[in-house]
Length: 117
Image (cartoon, rainbow, N blue to C red; front, top):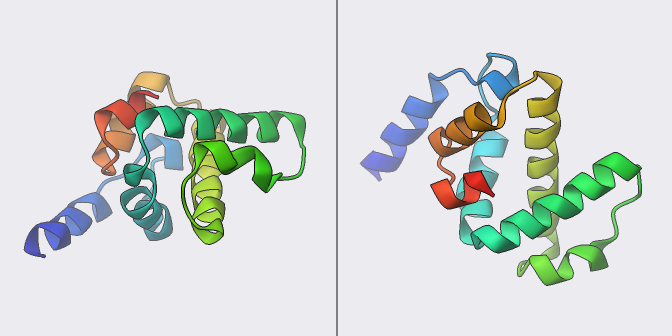
């Protein structure tokens, strides 16, 4: 419990380039730690590619598209979609390179394999 509290305090003091040199939202941090870390790196990569397809095509969200890449409840799917969409669009908005983005995701608690996906 103390290590988790220390982790949250440590992350809370950091500023991230993909957030415009600001703090990362506690909501995003909670989703990363509770949902995204539970996915395999392959499933996360497939899930993120579906999110990118939706962002670039301006389609509406088809929940059936995510069924194969996500083994969770519908609420978790929506939260994961929102989190990944925020992470990707913010990284593009602030011009963050993939190397810096990967390092910052690892600092937020995402495993290395996941952040490289």
